[in-house]
Image 1 (cartoon, rainbow, N blue to C red):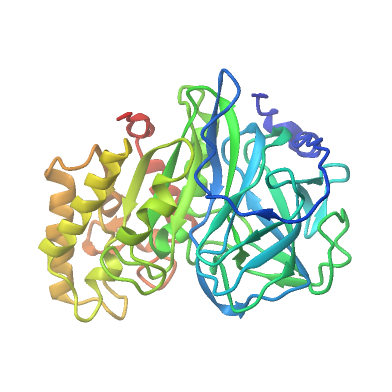
Image 2 (image 1 turned 90 degrees about the vertical axis):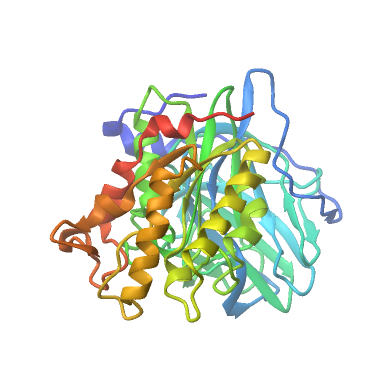
Length: 416
């Protein structure tokens, strides 16, 4: 694996970050195969997720044919043999991707010249994904550096019905509303900015053996709500920066599996954490640990579960993760007095749940986000310096404090 270039040389490192030199055969669309994580790699290498986002049925737009999406994502782990995973999990009709490309974003929708390279699916440049299915691409030769802005361009040749994607990306991507522009380096055709990721739900690389990843399973706080758009200031982004800078850890990949409004026990904004655990965490290559930060939306729901019911949900997540060889870091539910749905009864449940997270021993490790961001003078409130203004979601500084609270050693847990 290439070493990251020194920070002062970032522009030159960016220009050379992806050297993808695949030569692909043309032909009819491939048949979608199951999207299990790539399980094989060259000797001395291991597959690791470098970016991910939870999918749901997009309410903002339906699936549409004859358009090209240029989706901008930030890598975490570096490596080679890049693969993408395309999801039609919530679709109601097959989606045919005519072509898919991956390159390095320069600015806006424009790419660094010479970095945009075609991906293939079972040797074909196109693939049809049935409803409820996902598909992984073939590995793409070349090296991807950590913390690169990758642009994945998807020409959707045929689609209809519901679209699958991640609604609150907090990252501007782009749409060319007519025709196939996946191979374009320029931004000319990409006239429509969008703030959701369509179809793409994971990017994986082949990294040095021993490299692993962490998945952050959560709600809007993990999704990054009210952090500054287009700056990668969600708390998992700050965590990825820490991991990249720490030469003493082999945990380098970060998969952000937050969905705004998500709950542990019930569907609503996305499927419940219990229902999506396998797809969003346990199927990702290289994930050895999950950080579980869920529960606030359950507690403030009407009707709300009891503390015992929410704790039982946590136990099921821990048991299933352990059965898959994945460790679980339990995160305390953060304070939110001042938010419109806060009640004294909900606060009592939060305190009971947090006592369980801290003291039960059910988790492999604990990160106490509650104590990290609370106001010592008013423990049921977020400290004003970390408050975005709505009394629930941290601002950029609060997101950074959260990431700094994570003990990086706790992410090196192994059960396999």
